[in-house]
Image (cartoon, rainbow, N blue to C red; front, side, top):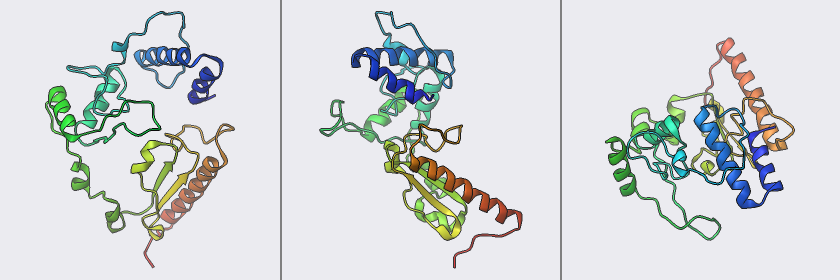
Length: 225
């Protein structure tokens, strides 16, 4: 059973507030133990939840770090906070009638201030694109055989490559209507919990990569017709 399924089960059998408390307590223990891949059951008899346990490590840490969707706690959180303060700038704000968070618009000025206080660095939102030329329009000029996957229930898909840049060169995008965050990166192929579209995308990608391996074996290179 996946961690997501266990989390959903909490909300089925508990009062919503109590379910959130159980979830936070479990996440804290897993984070502190340094074993995010293992579901850890924690006693839910505790009366208090220590918010400080959710902070990333390091000086001047804040709960709302460089990634407003959350950096995580401990050294893992510190590393991600640093990445969002350098090349992995996350432009995440809150607003609109269909969400539970108070309205707050993201700004580069806020990130500049946070990263200066936290790490003494200046964010470089165009750094990787300028260094490696990874704008979508540039791909056909220098790349072949890349799979881009998107679970459309994942908020990050808004910044993903949703259309195949060049099918002739093997630059292929696969979208999963019911896919969530990391539906494409599961360490297992797929299971009964996955929807048909997720399973179909996994199958299509396996077939495509198999074709590529055969082409590489015989020295066949993709070309634009």
